[in-house]
Amino acid sequence: MKALLPLVISALIAISGQAVAQQVTLRVHHFLPPTAFPATDMVGHWCETIKTRSEGRMACQIYPAMQLGGTPAQLIDQARDGIADAVFTVPSYQPGGYLRSEVFELPFIGGTEPVTAMAMYEYVTEHVSDEYRGVRPLWVAVGDPSVLHFKADPLKTVAEMRGAKVRSPGRYGAIALEQVGAMPVQLPANAITESLARGAIDGVMIPWSAVRMLNMDEEVHAHSVFPEGHRPFTSSIAMFLVSERTYSRLPADLQSVIDEASGLEVSRYMSEIYRQKGIEDQEAAKARGAKVHVIDEAQYGEWVTRMDVVRQRWIEEVERTGANGAALYDTATALIEKYENQ
Image 1: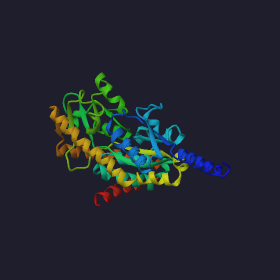
Image 2: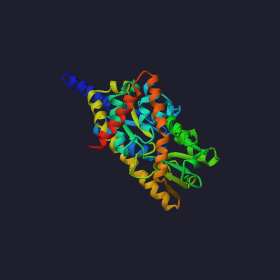
Image 3: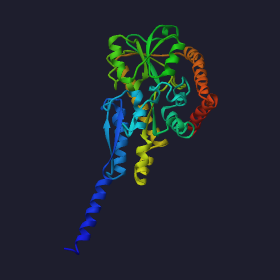
Image 4: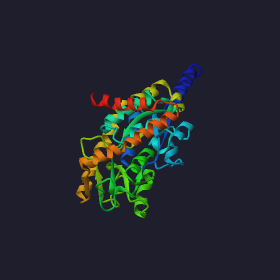
């Protein structure tokens, strides 16, 4: 028995070590319903990926629909403060909190969804990483371009926008709407459908891919879209981030698992999901008999001209923080061109 004792102790230590290794569970928090496609096809897919690649040593406990409390605007702070280990959110939900990152939501700046995602991932990790102290951006998911959705009839001209109460996802979307005379109302995604039903807003600035996801298809029956082949009006940009504290406490091999499941190519993949969903939802709206108006070239030019003030407003705000807003704008546009030409 004495001879066997060291073997027994060694076996128990080995078993204990394996048990500890299998206890890495990341608390993942987001604002969407659990069945929404970004929750399943993006967040859920990523969690399955790290579980598979870690051979079960690392997994996620996902908390959808703000189950850990707080508001969508607080999600990145929750990761920074340790309330969650990782979050999926839209940084611009926190007004001014990620000012330099908001450049990619400015009107008529972006490319296709995958191109803009890769450009923004490089931008936030290489050029404005100090905006994300305490957290680590893992991937970017760029939504399909924003469309103007209304309850009854599409608005066809800039003049018709005057006085319309339209939901905007962020500050710069709101400023853009002001330039065409609309009355912007900032709401998180989970408050839109009820606001439409109550008549609190007349329309919504949001991607096609959100229409069915948020059950808006029973509330909006008219859509004003910008012509294909042009720079999109705006894009809502989501991001998946992990707590720097959580990441730093992981063993090196599990850090590598996270690294390999993140980055440029993953950002491209996630944004392609948005692109495809946008196409599907637009076709579904047409099949329901919705009125879809394509804004003509003259009106498109009018929109673009009026948005110059939005770009200048962003540059001035950034420069008041001590950063070079014009240079950062040029960096963002150069990155978009870089990935467009690859």
